[in-house]
Structures are given as C-alpha cells and as structure tokens.
Image 1 (cartoon, rainbow, N blue to C red):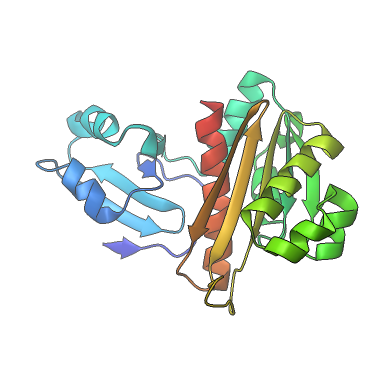
Image 2: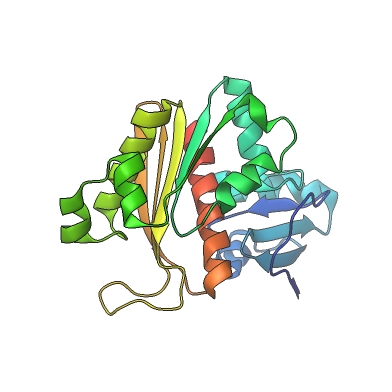
Length: 223
C-alpha cells in the first residue's frame, strides 16, 4: 500500500472516502478485492473488478465523497453552485488553507464570497464579535469561541453557508487542551454543526486534516 502525505487533483477511477479507517473499510468490504491509498484527504479505494464498484459505494455510504476521483473542494463547490448558495470562511489555525483550497477550483467565484484569517484574539473580537469574556473564560480554542466565530461570520458576510475553525495545530498544547485539539463549525442556512476533534499528526498535517474535515462537514450538511 502506497501512503500519500498530501495530494491535490483528480484520481481518475478512485473512490474517495473520509472518516473511515482502513480497518473499518476492510471490515465493510470483506470478500471484495481492492487497492488502498491513505493520507490526510482520507482513504482512496480502487476496485480490482469494476463490477464491484456499486457494491463498494453501497457499503461505504456517505463516507464516500467522490466516486470519480475528485478532491473534496471540487465536490463541495459543485454542490454549492448547483444549489445556488454562497460560502464564507473564518479561519484561525488553518490560516487561509480552506479558502485557498476553495479557490483552487475554477469557477469558485460563483459561490465563494471570501472570509477572514482571524489568527489573533484581537481580530476574533474586532471582526467577528467574539466576546472578551468568552475568550477569557473558555479560551480561543473552545466550542464557545468557535460558535461565536460562526455567528460573527454569518452576521458580517451574510452568506448562505459558512465555516469557522479554531485549534492548536502544534507544536504545543496543555493537559486540558492537547496538541491537535480543534473545533470546526459549519452552517447551511438555519442548520448548524460544531465538532471537536483531536488530530495526531504534525502541524501542517493537522491543518490539512482540519480543512478536509471542515469541507466534509459542509458537504454532509449540503446533502
């Protein structure tokens, strides 16, 4: 099995998944032959027999983000364009990576409005209206701060959809807030979701994982 650290672009013929481990995939696909490649973008699968493709897609369900080898940002962008929705982002630990991935896609101006890199607490307060007491009582890396970032993004940009991310990419962290701890929030109109994750990679792998998770959460809400 070949391991991919970072990969951008299409993987023609590959089924792309996010959120399942290799062990979980093998358990779901017992009796079927396939090749695997794993990286921060997820686990990619290539059937040994083309007739098994439909079975694999059925067994993996909505963990599949593309059956045609497309990267996550292409899949999300197509959904936004099809539904006629706009998107904005508020990024802390990802430092603009989500926005960069979105605008990698030709035609993204049809749905992507823009966003903010609010790396410092001052910008979180000044641009997104995160409360001083929230930062003092819960910290910049917290569910509460992520929620206020998301609400601020919604109020300032007034987009149909939004993504907010705050976390500790590393190195660093504490016992209560370990390295890799990240809060990711998304909204699609009146639907909102915030998740806590703890990544175990190095700094830039954690940042990429946060961007992939954020786009995947948006993909799921859009569907």
